Image 1 (spheres, rainbow, N blue to C red):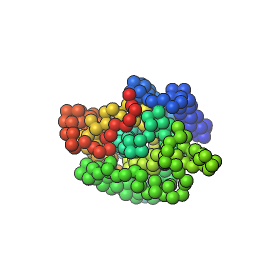
Image 2: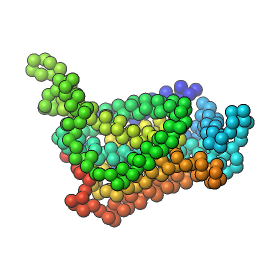
Image 3: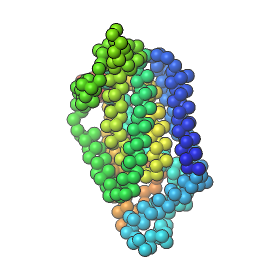
Image 4: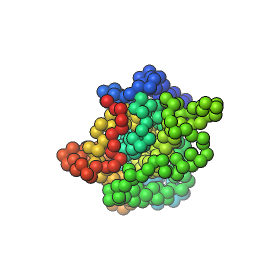
Length: 373
């Protein structure tokens, strides 16, 4: 039953991607602002509504997910409370604890954690969008080909993040102390994001390690050949086009950002199905979000502080949640974390609109890509 559920979800994702590339955005066309907004709204609605599916699956224990979710919360609470191995099997979470709350309402608890993970992943992808805009601008990628690069980039990102989630889940299950390492890393990342230098956008993408290595190992041409990633020279030799190099850089950029986002999602939940599905719906909406925000890039300069606060909040929660719950008797319910994250994002957007960046202080990565209408 578990295999069938995962297979069904992956089939749904495949259908969505096929509709996206084969029907809604067929051929080499420029994505207009209107179409991008419609598609963004569609992916946001689908991603949000999937939380209701999560609630149903876990509340009705479909494929045993509800029971495993409750048991995982119980075991995590027992470890945090210092319960010995002999008493572990019969230990019951105290009333008012996080584990007790999950046991009382597994469906909505799971759905809330999914929505938190989905929102965090989606919001963190905004930084990724700024970098992608810089890459497209630097390599002068023609507007009709940008959506093709993003489509295959997102497909690769789904596979790479799936691998990272599987490996991360196995490591955290085996070495629980890694959660504290992840927490400390998120706090460090939050501080760096809020107070660090903002020169990342000034780096030359063509001089990155990936670009230099690819140019050494793969025969490349300097000119585009339509939307092709590979082309043939007049002599018949197969070479990679600049579009292929852009795709490689976009893929590795997502891996870099996943180093931040994957620990963040583990700080929210360790349930593999919730982690994977929240990541999938966030990534699937990334392409349309890119085109929807392209004309507005540079207008959300204060949003980085909201993202830094969210990462710091999750990191500190990972470091001190068990101590707060078992030493102070205060449990942080999932819905409280959801409210904190939503309010933070709204505050970041409102602050950006009310206190716009001065023209000379805009994020260098916030460059409007060519061709977006």
